[in-house]
Image (cartoon, rainbow, N blue to C red):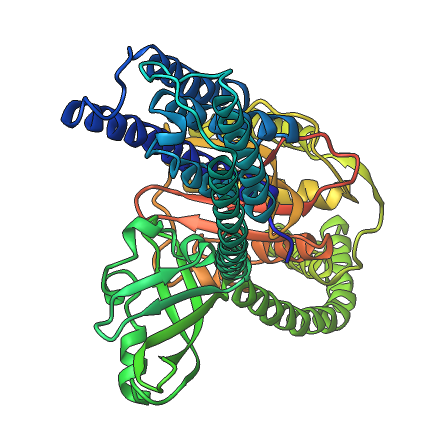
Length: 561
């Protein structure tokens, strides 16, 4: 894996800040040691004034401030490194000059700046600082021997050439050896630091990779310790459960995901893997989902149990699909039955209706037989209507498929119902503002679906109640749908009957055929859609029809629910 450039820059900045602090501390320590020697033994050192020390302080701290202002705590460019070396050597040279030069006991301070050079540029820095220190010390000593340079407060003394040569060679050799040794040591430190940094970067990348993998798998995942408390949960698990990490991590699993513990106790909690099982789960927002889960033990490198891993998925869409398949199979069987009945009954029924009509029109028919003939004709018409519903239920799919606006259908149905049944019952029909909602389908069939749902809502609402009609686009399971929602303020659907309302011939209304919702569902299925019902006793119910949106639809899509 490649190193993130931001992480490397941050590491270099931290190292640069540490180096600046080290330089500041060493500079202060060197100056403090010089002043301490002067205070304790004024007859040995600094018999002159302190102006050179002031200049040394100004040079050292002034350069550090300039360096920080110009380059901050990052690595210096090459020319700035050279200026740093000159400033370091000049600082020590001033102290050595001010304390007697040849007789100074502070010539060892060149070793300290050589060590600082090894921190700046490792081997090359240490050797460079050593060469510059050797040159500076030798030149200063040579100028003192020739009488050109005289330390302040010291009398002129003659330094024989052998002494000059011995001191210069000794110091230069010590400086160069220090530079080489500290340089090699600096290189080892650099390599070790880079290895540690690379290892830290690798650990961070592995942690980030692990987190991304865990958070992006499509299944919910959580781990629990031996006490049953959750110590890790991914984003998918939080989305399925409708909770946040703050509400799950550190808490017992049974507080928010009950039902799994029972399976573990039956299957063997510590040493076995619980195969896939299913439970019903009621989320905090009141939505019931079906969870398929499996658990397995979690062990450390030594094989000791450290908890369990729980993996689960939301099976609600699969359950809904299975239910639709069962309904489709059931509807197919009923459709075949309806077609057979239509064949067997409609032809003789037409003969009966025609015969009764002829008898009523016959002059010979007596007054007593007329009501009976009327009953025969009326019931024949009712039975013919029932058979017509059968044929509509089992009839061919979309006959006139075209691009149409569902919003226009909603306006037409709402206007017709308001002027008819709703007005007579005193029910207010409210139509929400609608944008164009384009689908591909049979306009007459879809209008029949909307008509059935709105009429049922009006019939379910009490006098003075309301029926709300709305239409919008929504993303569901990754696909875009046009949604038609019809909500009433009636008594709702009794518990236990929601699963039956789409069954053929099931009705709770007196005189109803029980085919309206069945026909509506069949038409919606033929249009590759589906119907959902949400109800609460005493608060009415809401029917939502989902139809695949056409590619040219311009409705505003709402989020997935």
